[in-house]
Length: 504
Image 1 (cartoon, rainbow, N blue to C red):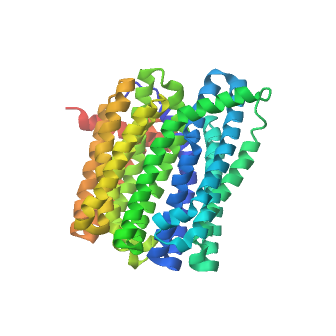
Image 2: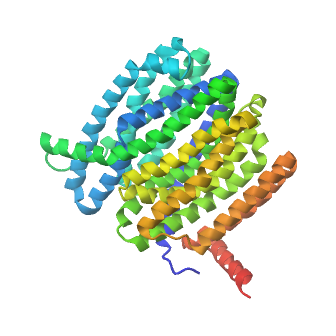
Image 3: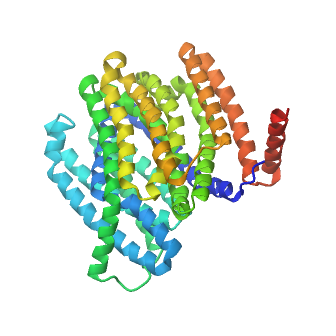
C-alpha cells in the first residue's frame, strides 16, 4: 500500500467520470455520425470534411493567440490568489480580447479564402465554401474562451453538459445537412458543431452572473489583454505548429494519394481521437487547473503528474487493447468495407496512443509554468517528426505511412517532454507507473503482432487481455480512491493479490 493520500485519485476519478461520461455519450453519437457520413458520402466525403475541420482548427488556433490555454491558467490563478475581484478582472479581459480576435480572425480567413482553396484544396471553385468556414473560425475562438472560463473556475459539470448537448445536437443537425444536400451539405455539417457549442457555452457562462468588481478602465483592460496575449502567444505558436502539421499531412495525402486515401487516414484518425477524448478531456478540465495551483510545490506537482499518468493508463488500456485486436471489425462497423486500408493506420496509431497518454501529463507541467519557448520547442519536435515521416515512408507504405509516422512522433515526443518538463519540477516516474506502462506496452505489442498474423487470433487475444486489464484497473482504482461497498471490496482483493504475488 502507498502512503500517498487517496484524495487526488478520488478527484481524478470523479472528474474523469463526469467528463468521461459526457465523452462516452459523444463517442457513441460521434460514431453514429461517422457511420452515417461514410454511408452517404464515402471516403472522399469523409476526407473533405476532415480537411475543412482541420482548416477551421488551424485558423482558430492562430486567431485565438493562445487565449484559451492562458485563460484557464489565469482564471485558476486569480481564483486561487486574488478572489472574486481578480477573477472578474480576468473575465472581462478574456471576453473583450476574445471578441476582437474572433472577428479579426474570421475576417482575415474570409479574405484569404481564394488562396486557401487553391493552395490547400487545389480547387479554386471551392472558394465560397472555404469563405463560409470563417464563421466556424469565429465561433471556435469564442467557444474556446467560454470553455477556458468554465475550466478555470472548475465548472466540470457545466463543461460535461455542454459536451453532451453539443455532441448530440451537432451530430443530428450535421447528418441532417448531409442527408438533405449531399456533398453540398459538408460545409453545413462542419459549421454546426462550433455553432451549437458556442450557443450552449453562452448559456452556461451567463449563469455565472456578471464579473465581480467595478468595470475595468480602458487602460487596465488593455493591460490585462496585453498580458494574456503575451503569455498566450507562445502557446498559440505551439498550437499552430501542431494544427499546421496535421493540415500539411492531410494536404500531402490528398495530393499524392487522392481524396479516398485521405478518407482512410481521416477514418483512423477520428477513431483514435474519439476514444482518447474521455481521458484527455478530463485531464484538461480537472488536472490542468489543479496542477496550476500546485506547481509551486515540486513534491505535490510530481505526485499529481504520476497519479494522473497512472489513472490515464489504467482507463485507456482496456479500450486500446480491445480495439487493437478488433480493428478490422471496428472499421467495418463504424464505416464501410471501402475503408479497409484504415485498419493498418489505426493499429500504428493505437500503439502511439500509449506514449501519447504518458506524455500529456508532463506536457501540462511545461504549460502551467509559463515556459512558452520550451513548450513551442517540444511541440515542434513532435509534430516535425510526424510531418517529415509521412513523405519519407509514403513511397514504401502508401497511406499506412501516416500511422507509423504517428507512432514515431510520440517515440520522440515522450522523452522530450520528460526531459524538459521533468527538470522543472524534479520529476521522476514512480515504479508503479513504470510497471503499468511496461505492462500496457507489452500487451499492446503482442496483440498487434498476433492481429497482423491472424485477424481472428488477434481479436480473441485482444479481448482476453482487455478484460484482464480492465479487472486490474477496477481493483487498482477502487483501492487507491478509497471507494466503499462492493467496489471497495474489489480494491481490497486486488491489494491482497498484489501482496501475495510480490511477497517472497
